[in-house]
Image (cartoon, rainbow, N blue to C red):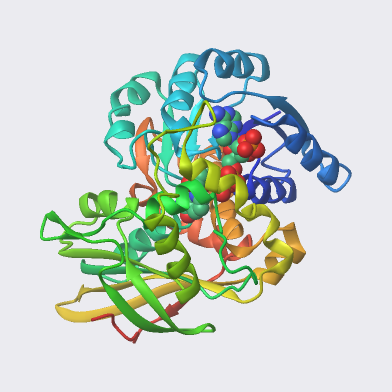
Length: 400
Ligand code: NDP
């Protein structure tokens, strides 16, 4: 029996696990292991009887390599899919090396005490994975993830050279709360309150948070304000797409979200510096997470659509060319299918697909790789099959 260990049982993991259970031919046996075992048991109880996939559950602290190794030795998975938080990436990679398992995740490593994320820490594992004959696939959600696959696909089939990429992440969904985040609040707020940056002519150009704003008319969503953010795939695409001159990442935010965020920042609630409160050390951002709505609870109340994709500019047969690849995903349809909103869905489905391709041997090569370093074709085919169909536009409106 083919065995997959999935670590974490939050918003994204719940979608991935539903999708694995729809794909029991590949996911014959899975173990859901997370910090809170009751969440794993609840999901198992929901899915058992609807699938041929055999489901096990376990409690694990993914910050503890010994515990991870003991669990892996006992279950003997072929691959470990890390859907916990970015803080655990290196520990889980260490455990994979010790036991001899392939590795895949959706977000790059970030130290818990510093709001800084970059691939260098995980890329430093390249030789170790190569020597062990193991594959590690980094950043296999939507962005990063599908955005890298879209870039590889555009380069393979549409361009001789890509010079400009704009990644546009639009969430046109409405959950009815004045303020809530669509995925883990701590990770989300750390990301959007950091300085922005983009990659141009071989170096980073830094911006203040939310300094660069554009309006874009998104297909099936409408006009939205979007803001330039730093995002992890800029780092890998800057290296892996030859001839690239500039890559930017934009995400849409509504007025209410930004006003609340500014206020929370101004009063110190987004800080990750520990403070003393009633004799206890607390981290304001972690306390804020505890009082905000759980992203996993947004599913039933979120309406509207997401539209995420990449606009490419480059050359084909000596001619200038533009090309837009995107996916539109409906929050309520996702909820009907797997009980989650579209932000978790658009991340959870690609994580299942990447793991499937690894298990099938289509995306298997010893070392540590970002998704754009693999053949995009089987992934693109799987996106259409597993709920994230893509749309092409050969004459897109560009972002100035
Ligand atoms: P959640 O907070 O909903 O889920 C995280 C899960 O990990 C929870 O079940 C949590 O346990 C578990 N966990 C946390 N710490 C540990 C630990 N030390 N040991 C074991 N389990 C632990 O997050 P999301 O599902 O929203 O996000 C999951 C990942 O996906 C994150 O890394 C996020 O950055 C990434 N992501 C990637 C995107 C992409 O497009 N590439 C988009 C969105 C998210 P507990 O239930 O006890 O809290």
